[in-house]
Length: 131
Image 1 (cartoon, rainbow, N blue to C red):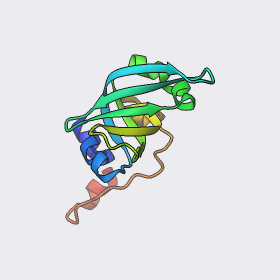
Image 2 (image 1 turned 90 degrees about the vertical axis):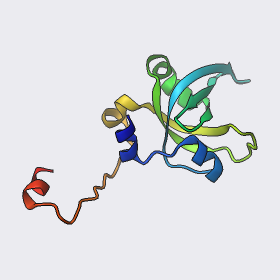
Image 3 (image 1 turned 135 degrees about the vertical axis):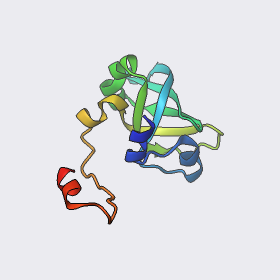
Image 4 (image 1 turned 180 degrees about the horizontal axis):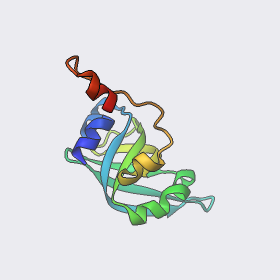
């Protein structure tokens, strides 16, 4: 998926941890630890990794209800969220806002609102029409 991740301009976990910010990350599922909150809702702590680092996703009950079955069926996910800047640990901690399997991203992800193309100035009119 390297080429697709370049298209999506995904941030790696190592960079996200140091910058304390990112738009979208992508990672391979390593483990899921489900817990029950005091209110009786299910949530999870999910370990993911990419080629440069590891991260722990905190998936709160509302999102977990939406993605719990996806976590059982898929292994590579796009992650939208925010870095937990209260964490001083070496592991990047991300508060997940959304999680979607990479293989479903172009079919199901409603957050894609805009696509931009960078086109070389030497492109021919026929090629542009084909695009």
